[in-house]
Image (cartoon, rainbow, N blue to C red; front, side, top):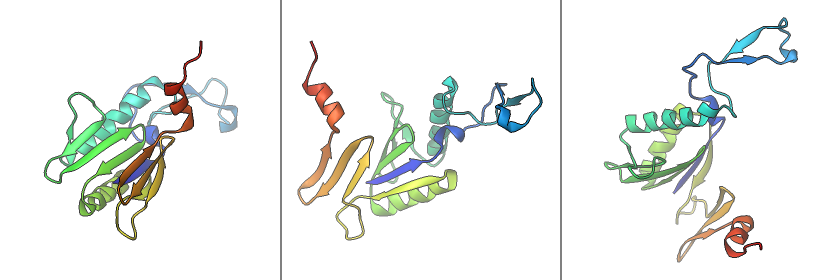
Amino acid sequence: MLFIDARKAHLNPKCDEDVYIELPEECGCPPGMCGKLIHWLYGFRPAAAAWEKHYSDLLRGIGFDRGKSCGVVFYHGERDLSLTVHGDDFTFCGAEADLLWMKGNMQKWYDIKFRGIMGPGGKDIKEVSILGRMVRWNDWGIEYEADDKHRDCLLYTSD
């Protein structure tokens, strides 16, 4: 399994609309001047949709098919490579050579934080925290530990 975090994800897709923002005082611009967005900023409603379209187009361009029932899962049939995306976190499952191929693609497209490749090898990571959960590689299989907050929400209800 390969874990990658795309840094500044929502700043990657181009803003294809005419969107203007009020500039902060520290810009030193005259009063009344505004800025036109070239790339989306976090917090803008279309930013998340633009990010999803952006990475989906890139993935489809290298042979991934997008899930029909869930738009954030992908599969590359030739390479038998699976992917789930949650925001800016990408989790791939496949053979090491294909995971390294995908890491190379991601490095071309984005500034990434390479979290590691999990597996049985000596250089493979054995534990990673992703989305507030711990994933561990054990001799007997993969262990997934939910964070306390989400576990408590599932186990306990307030009256």
